[in-house]
Every structure is written in structure tokens, then in C-alpha cells.
Image (cartoon, rainbow, N blue to C red; front, side):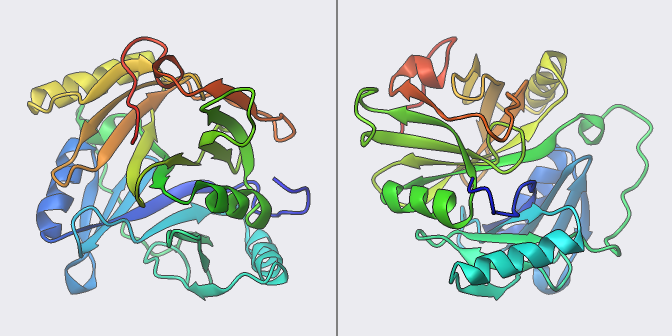
Length: 291
């Protein structure tokens, strides 16, 4: 991150997922990932849980129209707005129904919309839950990942325009700095709130929930088992980020990750280089090699 970027610290607060059957997808996430569900206008749904929020709306299955990053104060928001305008970045009206109306939105070279703002104070209250259920499981919405056939421009945008801090790169050749295949970025001390993988096209990759510890990973896996949902990848431990994980797929084939022990890095820590091999992606077993 450039030293003058005011985006640090920002945390992933929510995102929107689209479906040709939003009610089905909202019910799925409410059941599987422990969300309270509220109706929004025009057939959209607000999902809220402990440390996690989603908006589900109508659209092409698998689309992710925006990612919402929470700032710390109105002063920081105004500094971010001025900083982006000073960089010559075109800003857009915020589509977020969770952030206040003065949130600022920007679109990266692949078309992904990032919204920086402050949560509204009039969101529906969540019901108290006194018995164990998915709603009581820890799982803070923590990072989002995309795939790109335009990796170099995406890296320049997140590093030089937004000023995200590179945490780790994965290179096809560790001796060749131009052979990067993956870039992990942090906007606060956690290893990554955003990452981009080189691929044959532009698409969503996954979003992730950070849980309290290894026991919480076990509890989520047991919860998935009770719902007859198979783990798609894992359990394992990533190299970059050093986090424990497993992934499942939702009804639209969106990958969703449960993660724990994500590495914490000071802002000034320089990025590291990992080789593009299975062991970097999963220190314990099989790796998911994107195309």
C-alpha cells in the first residue's frame, strides 16, 4: 500500500450474490451459513449473522455485483473519496443497501465494484438465539477472491490506485518476478481481504468466513455433514496466509470457504514469493490449481 492511501484499515463487510431464484439462494445461506433473513424491496434479501452480512438479489446465477468494505469513520470516508478523486478514478453511486448513501464505489479493470462506506444505523435487528445453531457459530465475513485473465492490470490497480498492501505472490518461476500467477492483498493487518488468481477468463472465485479456531472449523464441518453437504476441498492449510480451511459449493457453484488462523501481518511487512505448486495452495494435501 502506498503510504498516503487512507483506505487502511478497511474490512470486508458484505457482498451481494445474484440468483435467478433469490428466495432459494437466501434460504440456502440462511440455513447453511447461519444468517437471519429480512426482506428488501424488489425481491432482494438482507442476510445478517454474527460478523457477516450478505445481500441476495435477482440476476445471473453466480454474479457478484459488488463487494462492500467497511471504513472506520466518516473522516476516513471523506479522505478515501478525496484520495480516489485525486488519483483520477471515476467513482460511481453506491448500490449497497447496507452502507449509508454517501459510500463511494469504484470499478476495477475487470469490472468488479468495490464500495467503501459506513453501515447504516437503521438495519433490521437480529433476533437473539439461545440454542446452538448455525447462527451461533463464529464466522466473520473476511475476504473475497476473483479470477482474471488480466492479472497485471488488476495488480497495478489494487497496488497503485487503491493502495492495498501485497502480502504474498505465487509465481510460476520464483526467480522471475514477472511470472506472477496469484496476488494476495490486505487492507488491514489480516493477510488478505482480496486476492486475484490468473485464469483463462474473468469470474468469481470464492468468498470466506473467518472462524475462531480449529474447533470452530470442526463445528462447521459437522454442521455441513448434518445438512448432507459435502466438503469440496479440504480440510487443509494454505501456504500464503497459513490459514486452516475447507470449502463447499453453493447451489450456483460459488465456492465458499471456512477459514481459521489467518496470518496477521504489520502494514510495513514486505510481500513474499511462493512457487506455483500444489503445496503452496495446500500444505496438507491436494491443491486447487486454477486454469
